[in-house]
Image (cartoon, rainbow, N blue to C red; front, top):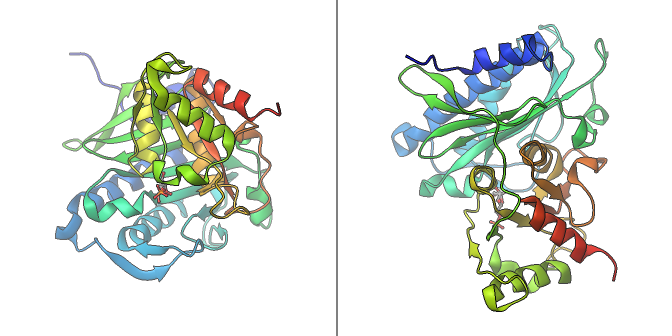
Length: 335
Ligand code: P6P
């Protein structure tokens, strides 16, 4: 019987054979994965678990929180604070950074997360997920503060998400490609089901919220218009469109079969660079996409090169199949 490889064995391989992770980073990923299993169980209970609907509170983004947003955030905080691998955490659901309590030893890693991305889909049973990003700080850093988190995404040491859909899957990179693990609910373990995802460079599927069409900047408008013209237009082929309204679901589809995902700047709020958050949405997803052979830009530059200035800052996001992103970037170059 072929022996299936579980998450722990994969991480031990990465540590022992490739030296890409430390024992503390291995522990961090295992703890996050365990927390995601707990979140998956809560999500799957739905109304039967009394976890649907609004929490009656707002997060730092000014968005109404769902009960599951709060539950997922608390699960991740509780799971990660005692292990000695983390110095601090940051979350979409919390205004400021969360230093590990002085009751526990502090490690050299920072964990950032969107505990439950796609919340608007929770009550209608559409796929949602947890996104996480891991940064490093010099060991023994005394007081961790927000500026320690303001590192460009290329400095992430690990990134991933857990998608709560028909299956629960953990998608992870520790810097050597992208691996996919599917939750075996009978054993309660994440089993390796894809060892090295590669995104097709070419695609005929785009993902964008078309209701914002009239607000887009010209380069994005040109790109989408050409896709819509299909084989009679300059692209010479017909395109399909998908929009789940949950970044994790849309990006997972792109990682698994190719495509291009856009949430660009638009003129509804000109001072906002985009809707999605840089540190715990765009950066982890961009690292995964690049590790799988794709590309991720904000229109003109690589997302992973953006130097953050604020914990919850937003950015314009275009990511996926490399050929499409290169074309989009060319449309953003000055004429
Ligand atoms: P819109 C979910 O709220 C989210 O942050 C992303 O997961 C998703 O891609 C986007 O917003 C959807 O935004 O404007 O289409 O509802």
